[in-house]
Image 1 (spheres, helix red, strand yellow):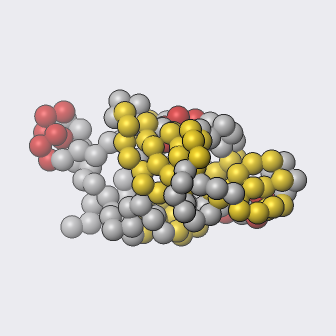
Image 2 (tube, one colour; image 1 turned 135 degrees about the vertical axis):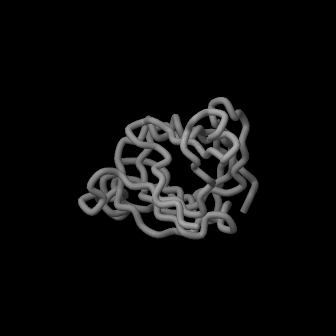
Length: 155
């Protein structure tokens, strides 16, 4: 049964998943788990593309894949995971080369609060959750101080 569009976060307010049982207990509407995930920001068609974000980067890392994502603290939604198959050094708007993989510790809630620039959403494959979320569109994000906690031996 098609339930229609559900905006998970709107203007900083979360609309969490509710089963029929939890909706009955709380008085909230039923919001079943979804099987697609789309992140957009405002007028998405006017947003810069990934190449534009790279070109305007003085020094940073370009991450193209996050892997082995696990929940550390459910209260803050702190996640840990690894970068994989694509971590690149960007200097003066140019991709200079491949660098090693890292372990990261971040809360997506905190991360969304620190986003400095959002690019144009595009279809992508969620490597970690590809069995559950097969229809995904995400924009590239510029996030200062992404927490790389250690170098990973993963290759």
